[in-house]
Figure 1 (cartoon, rainbow, N blue to C red):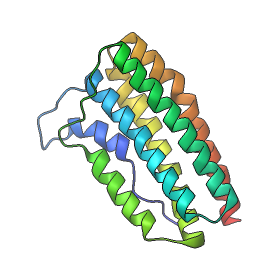
Figure 2 (tube, rainbow, N blue to C red; figure 1 turned 135 degrees about the horizontal axis):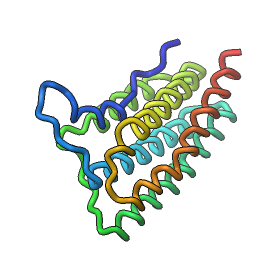
Figure 3 (tube, rainbow, N blue to C red; figure 1 turned 60 degrees about the horizontal axis):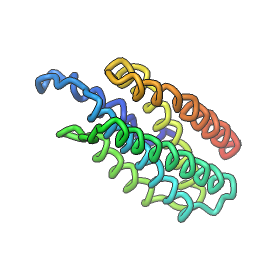
Length: 173
């Protein structure tokens, strides 16, 4: 089964580099907004999984992701406040549009089909986050405290990716 097309964070971050528009530099306020949105959106997909899934393992994964992403989001917001950085979403925020599309697609599914789609989405999403963080966001961060924070939470995203892959194997076995 093909996963939902949701390399949103990567696309959002890389949207600055498209030949159709002048390249706008990624700055710390924009990176903070992208990072906050990435966590918020995964909380929302997890909440949908709690409502829709009847599979204990899927609900447990969703609950763990919700818990972790809420904590990281709050830590990021606290750091932004401490650093006096006002999160500024990109003007053309592809991440928000793609999240809405993914939620619409997930809402159209039920039962085992929902479970498989949700887990596939989480794999695609977390891989996209990791790719964007390492390839685009980290190199653009100017503030050393912000960079250290983003580097610190990277292993959690990797852990989520691995957990989702393991669950996917169980769901398709």
